[in-house]
Image (cartoon, rainbow, N blue to C red; front, side, top):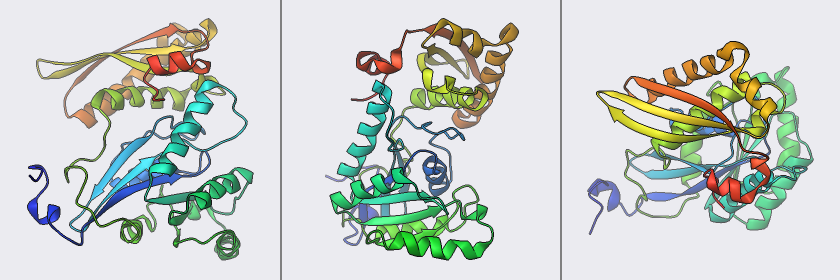
Length: 308
């Protein structure tokens, strides 16, 4: 029996391709920005701080010929010894193991040891690797780009190499057709109008965390997480209660800010984005609580919704 949510033409098309594509790379190379550009809508939060992405997030792009299930992954990194670092690396490696192809994102003109370690992981798995050389809009003079690409191309066999900019959406539209060639012949796994696997509650918690990450400085963003305690509709509006968990009492004061101004600004920015995303007015209430060293506790991570 066919899925009623999948149009018969696509479900029965023998040439239809569908599969999983992990977007991988070291932290802060623009993976989440690229995913949002590929989907032409925001499903993954972004900031200029590395290790903003903590979860595997599916972004689904469907057309008449294919369904590409992009997996936005935490940046593979070394040096971090806390449970959160282990969680993020596990999430990224698991995505590599499950992928039909991998979209390897590097930063134009910058290749470091962490890039090499990611590439070695990809080569070891033997799946097609599409190399996305990101942030080419920042390259000056332009003549420096081609030698860099040629040098990277000698490091492994890449199925495709695409210079692009996720932020400026330069060459992003060429990626789906190139990627689809390396996916298996298969009917779609998801309804063609579905864009992500994440719930509205998850999206709300990530919006709050993004606004916090963008406003807070130094290392504090890595010591906080957001948990949704209430998500309900009432009289045409959405009621959202969220707890911001920090690791120490001193961090609580920083998040709240003088006279509560920091928390008010975070709430205002988050409420505006939620209203746009969910298409209705949002009443958002935020609390800040302390859970000592939560990011170094496997049990606390599971309790707060971080998958094993």
